[in-house]
Length: 220
Image (cartoon, rainbow, N blue to C red; front, side, top):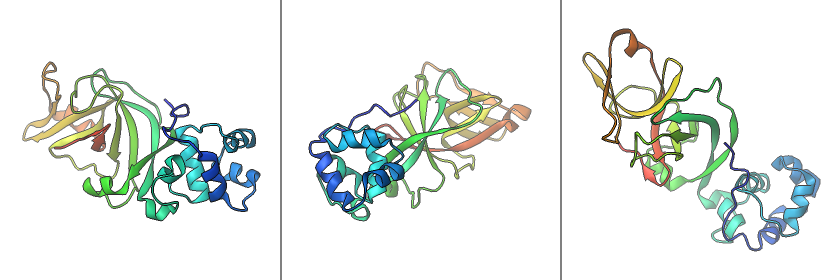
């Protein structure tokens, strides 16, 4: 699933701010750095609205703050803006009926406020990834179709919400370690708890701890 058609609100004068940030840079150079076609860049510079992913790539290419470039608010300086980007992968992690993907392919990037990441206990974007949740078993904590931020480096099993694999199923659930195995819990009361033991518990592979979903912080 792609963000290529998502539009920024308030992009009036995006073209003027982009020209300001470009300085003497030639269009063909910017197009190559931002990985967009020269014809698309030309249309943006003539007033066409960019997609979210185009705005992210252009901001990175000209080293401008993403929010300033898109809205005019804040500082043009990317370092002062306090935003970083996290890769989005096409793996749809199920929070209900499980789905499976052979391999994760990066399909874009999602901007995050560095203050939010600090509140989540994250000091680096290394190992962070964004996925899409499916199903209603984790509602209202994680809604169907919500973007989910996970820390792929945090794979130690403990009480909390995790993206994990059981066999060929990729799932998002609340996990709890027990003496006799692993308890898999749903936040939606209509879904019963699962207890996996023995060899089945050994097959649970943690992908990463879920830190945030949509506008709701995922808490243990």
